[in-house]
Image 1 (cartoon, rainbow, N blue to C red):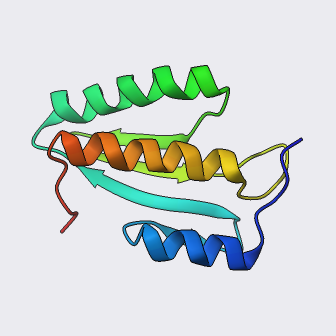
Image 2 (cartoon, rainbow, N blue to C red):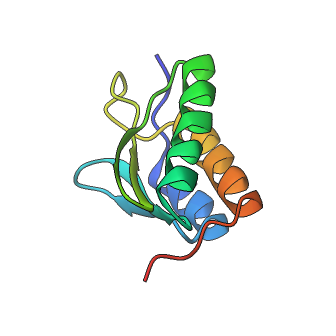
Length: 104
């Protein structure tokens, strides 16, 4: 089982990834991604799904037209772990390269 990240590790990571937030009560990293349209949003989800499957680490997420709401946690650890940081960073990199917009 993966080791839970400490509060200090989470805060340090958030300092480098300011689009994400942390819900300490629910123990999840959260971010909203917004794209030009549904096809781009769904394309993002498809690419991330392939990466998540390879990592055996799957996001909790939803999609509404151009918006993808993401929550990351490691269910086995009941905490945020390095696996969440890794998948979140992948999402950030892909979204930035493909023109994701800041949510309103």
